[in-house]
Image (cartoon, rainbow, N blue to C red; front, side, top):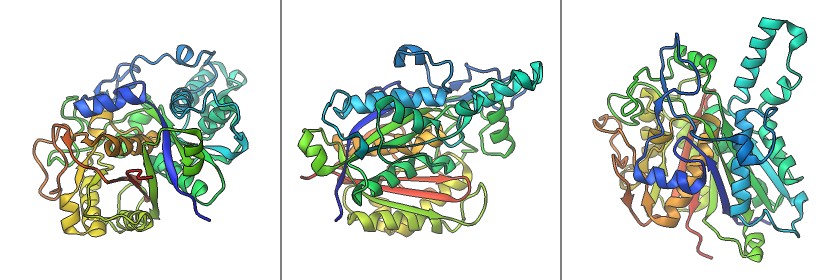
Length: 413
């Protein structure tokens, strides 16, 4: 027996807001979270701008000592608290917690915890290795800590597919609930790796923009784009089996209806130029969802502001949906405001799709001033738009050739 799956809760910590509502409001307003890097030294670095989370105090937000929790875990815990409360699960006493799981991933994990530990050992010797180095750096710890905090003992796992990580956690959670393995799953991702070592690594593999103007550094689909801007944060969604949600009287944002998961098998960092991987992922999500590609579609594109990604996605949309449907869709890249939140980006963009369906508002792609002739679809430049959104699609591509597509539609009972 297959089950319908809905979104009943959301939580976020992002470069434009430290809650889900604040994040959504900022995105609709076209507010950028990109600024000169403030939290680490940029001395010797060629990149000096990023989309950092601002004003976040983990100890205050979580009400506990956070010295032994990497920042990505702190973000995940804060987002999970908000998502649980939003879904009405925080105070529920009759939950079967063996039927509620946690699928939370991180593209990189606790990189700052690792680099800080290495600095300590270099200065003081291996015997001074911090005892919490391993649990603070490993990429599964956000999922583990969320499970522990909320006493959720259902299916629990991380996913690591680079920039597609939390799109895959949402997709895999959808499938687990659809096929009866859980009643609800907290799904999402977290990232906190705006540190000199990661900045240098992404810079030298030619992924980051070296543009130091925050207003133009990230301009997806623009002819002058030249690389992505690093971001950070977390987003957690509560995916829930429909009848379980209805029995609780939960608010339903939208229905999750389709998921595509493919690989390019082409290159470790570049998308396949024929876009066949993301094309197939989109087709799989659309087919599973049974949606009409030409009817009221919003697409939250991966839209990284790299020359190859944005061109490849445009090809993929046309190949998967058909030229006419692709041209009639409303599309935007919220990375133009949040930067690239890496392992957290897929879940946050899924959240944007859910809110766009619910509100009929399409967030803009800011910074798009000179459209690339090869990116010739409606990318909602500059300002939010209003539309009747019957369904939405979120696409994400990750280093290693990973592709994910998620399909959502308005809940109709």
